[in-house]
Image (cartoon, rainbow over all chains, first blue to last red; front, side, top):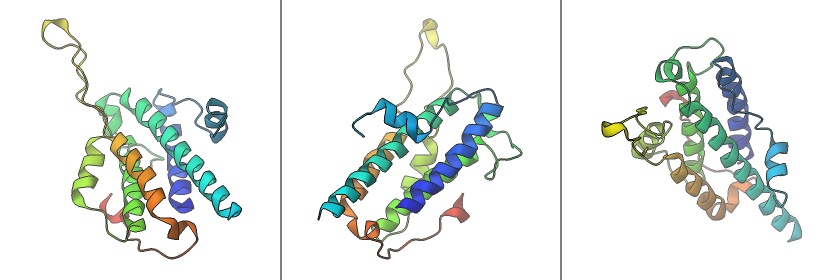
Length: 41
Length: 138
């Protein structure tokens, strides 16, 4: 399970950089910001 | 027992984060015009924004299926790929109305993730499970 989650994270990061290059940034999708949004998580 | 409970709690948090991050990437990709969405990009290991998203979708579906001891089925793969976009990029329909977009399909995958987590304790315990590579399809 960790493999699929980590693999996805790698490709999401890559895709986020590509989207940003096109002028459409997804914003910060680091785990930290998820944790800030959901303190109970 | 406590370790097992803590592991499940951590796994849930990581799966929730996966959904959260997927939603953000998909919502951003929705704003990209069709041409750019499919444009070959240097640095895209899977060709384009579309190719990147398709790869992520196939890998996640492939693992989900693997947790359940089966291969990914063509229908769910096709549905996932179709759902990478929310729908036709029409801004104005007849009479100047903004047509409702079809529901995004990624949500079905989210529910599947949660279900698979509950049903598949073996992979979490580090035991082997059947996994068939899906990369050749994407």
